[in-house]
Image (cartoon, rainbow, N blue to C red):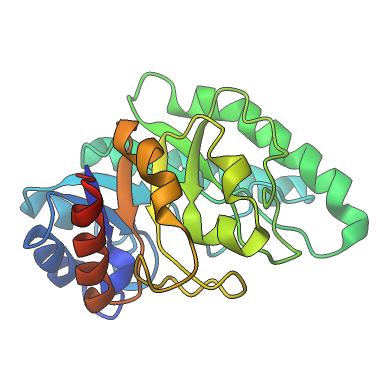
Amino acid sequence: MIGISSYAFHDLPLSEALEKIESISGCAEIYSEGMHDIFRHAQTPLSYDLKYSVHAPTTDLNISSIREPIRRASLELVRQAVDMCTQIDAGMLVVHPGYFSYSYDLPAARGALNRSIGEFADISGDTGVQICIENMPNWECFLFRQPDIDLNGIGFALDTGHANTTGTLNEFIKHDIAHFHLHDNNGEKDEHMWIGGGNIDFSSLHEVLKKSRGIKVLEHRNGEYIKKSMAALKKMGIK
């Protein structure tokens, strides 16, 4: 199934963003920031005939924090996001792996991320919500820019644009992928362009996308990019 991230309509209230998505697709991923913060608008998604996934907040959430109180608070926010998912019948929660400020802290940040991943099974429990960790773009502060993290059974959300900036797309597609964020760029900046707007060879992803039962979310910055990507996926025979 092809989904649309509400990120494309971040300048609109969540209700208007979901109206636009409903006219294009049967699936929406709520990017839980700004006017689309699921904690502030928990009832809004219930008014639309859409299948949902949720992108957890990125502001103030760092599951790799070397400060244990911050890591614990981040896990509590993930727990609350899982609860929000159950309320709107969203089966997928996408979470960023976290970040660090100084290279000296990298080993500690990795350890913190591993502890957080180890607690996700208890957080999701029997809710039916799958937590997925997303690979990150080529910014030195981010973890999981390379396929070098043991997800310990937690789902993997492949972000094609992020992987293109790190030159790791061919490595990441060898792994089990539960969820997709699809967008394009020219390998340097995380531009969130339409499929075909950058230099990613999406034909190399054809079989992976076609065989996958995961939701393929178009994560763009505006509606025009969505139209172009929908046309590209249709041409590829991806539904």
